[in-house]
Length: 98
Ligand SMILES: [Zn+2]
Image (tube, rainbow, N blue to C red; front, top):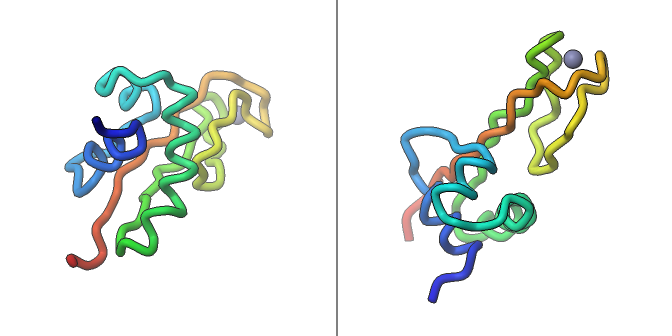
């Protein structure tokens, strides 16, 4: 049986599009908080396997503020305090094949 981390890597690896934590949670049937925790781990763990987590950062839909690319998911915009946020999206790029 695959771990949540392994399932997420399989889904995001060389994916055609980027996925938000909610989409990953829905597609894989994993709790959203587990997904976010796993992404944080994946971000570091896959580097030595020649892969990189690509992050489309969170963005505020009200004022347009763009967050730092991160696996941390904020619930409020630091500039205008709106909670109307575009979620971060993720995909894994394979830098070199083994
Ligand atoms: Zn804002």
